[in-house]
Length: 399
Image (cartoon, rainbow, N blue to C red; front, side, top):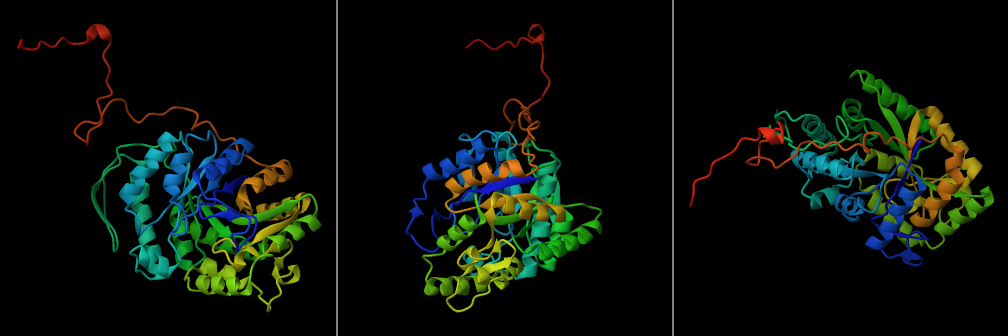
């Protein structure tokens, strides 16, 4: 199993839906969280993407030199960035971080936000574009060969990536998409298929669907899950803190949030909303616990991952192992506030789970793509080296 944490570039605090107990979102705080992730031994951390977040690539880049071993799971956005530019950014980050980049492919699910970014494609069309994007991106990052591609949405002629990253053939691709169109893209391209924290029975059905689709392409895929977590030394303490987390939410705030989330055409987001059993003003455990110890309170006002595992260390570890038995090996976790909760998770869960976070061989070995300066913006320098006693003398004219 691998556990990743979360860098909250859209804000953090002790309570949801209020500025009370909120944390200033500045570099110092983000650095604290990243350093905690690094020092505690998490496999890495996810950085969110979207207009409500600080830019993930800029933030992750600023944290490279502050950390040593954690990986950064950073989004590429087909439709918002060209595959050639994304390939160059990938190679650069991977080299400068010594192989600590993971790629999260995000197609997007909010038509209003996408329109603001200049994307006006329908849901399934966006996944068709993503398919074309990944065909180009994978070819560029994996090989120095020239790439030519002409699709319905994207076209490149003579595309090349001169810089090579450390990870071969490229950093692991993570992707989440619950629709048929999304699953088709995952089956063809990605290494890790991600689901949000649905009840185990729903996750099992989704995993089986993705495995079957991937087999059609002769591929196998690994699986991950994105969850919040409220883990304490007892079940009672965990449930008290879950209720406290939403104790400052007003009905007006919940109503406005649910209306905004409902406009998304993301099937995954719709599945999250379907878990909300809103019953008037009651927001108690019996209403929001959608599966044993799986609590949907976060999704009252938060988009994307809306469920949390709640319980004692023994209880939460047991629930995580249930997902592991379904085929989930990567867990991307978060909790409020993210700094303190990173410590709780490490202290209470790490020793109870079969973790493997020590894949260091590649990123600990220097692997330069070339030495010298690129010639005429196009040609790599000649790798041949002459011994000093064989260096040819060059006569220069006297001036």
